[in-house]
Image (cartoon, rainbow, N blue to C red; front, side, top):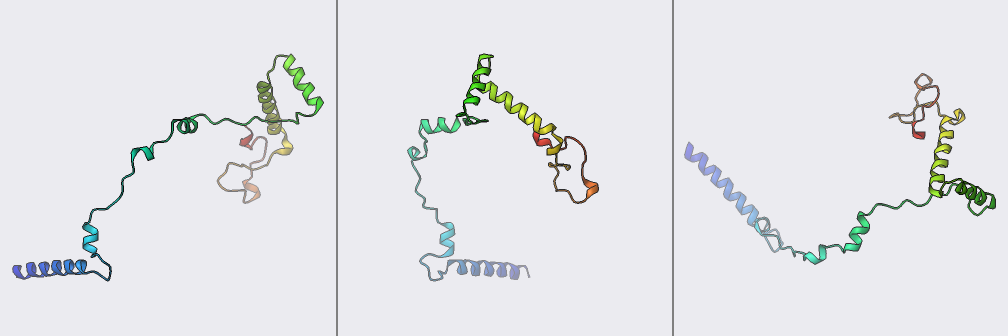
Length: 141
């Protein structure tokens, strides 16, 4: 009985090899395709190296474009900027401070408040689920 099972296993193994070895119309058999080493052309190191200028450009900090809060071509705006600069502000500091206070005004204006939590996973479904009251709008902070 033991010899019989060994013969059956050997027969199945031979059938498997025969099936894999026969070519189905293509030039190579499946078994030889599996066993064959891949013939890949290796790329030279010079092709993989990025020029130093491009690498530094990629790694450098991104430059944020200048924020224009007003139309600088208007003479009154130019005068305001000039007055603030005489008071000791530089333009970047002035724009930063003005952006802060404009955001602050938006955040504390109750007319702009959406009376639901914008950071919730789902939008408002029913009236009892709303968060009424001030400052439920976290993206102004």
